[in-house]
Image (cartoon, rainbow, N blue to C red):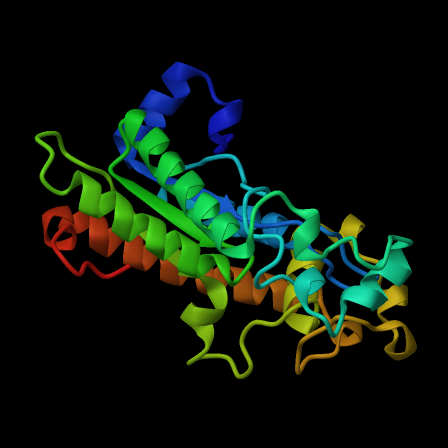
Amino acid sequence: MELRFHYLRPNQITARRTEFPVAYVPLGTLEWHGLHSPMGADGLQAEEMALRCARKGGGIVFPTVYYGESRVNSLLESDTKYQEGICDRMKLQKDTFAEEKFPYTGIQQVEHCNHHLIHIISEVASYGFQLVVFVIGHYPLIENARCAAITYNQWAYDKRWHRIGTMAVADFLLLRDRIPNAGDHAGGWETSHLLASHPDTVDLRLAEDDLQFGIMSRRNPTESSAAFGNEIYDLAADSIVERVRLWMAAPDKQMGHGMNL
């Protein structure tokens, strides 16, 4: 069955929500992931993770969010160590990622992202779901998602209607006690994910040692494999589904002050 909200008809959404009223929202970005991987790597991975969770445990996957995070904070293109090299390789002006090229400051962009996520929570809530799970592909967005969850819950806490619960999950946080060096940027972890779910987007010939640039990992991307990607996708999805089921088994216990995010 199709699990993506935007592909489903109203009666299909109603049936799926009645069965298990959980909505997964994948969060990614557009960012350099080496010469060998696509710019949308984070969102592609987050959506695949969300789909595997919905298949394993129920729920619906809302559209992946690629836009809205700060373009001058916590982004490889904003890192002065990599800006010039990325611009050179993409044939862009050297100052194209400078903060003054954007209409809003870095902190304003962070705030706008948080507001956008709060709006998404309320939009999901309007369709009758009980829990929204932000599945993080771009690691820094875990902070934005948690901030949005806290702010939304603070606003909705004393409303007469039943508010939606919110959770934010990232695979490297779930697996760091089980797999050494969990998570990376464009290295063997993320590249293995993409080989498992979107192999046509990866060209390992461009990951050779002399071509590598902007990769943050203890795993060489040339040693990536679809088998490892499927393993870590499924381990993380199992962990997420377990947490979601625990939440859904006793939602009232999860909605108080200082809730576990």
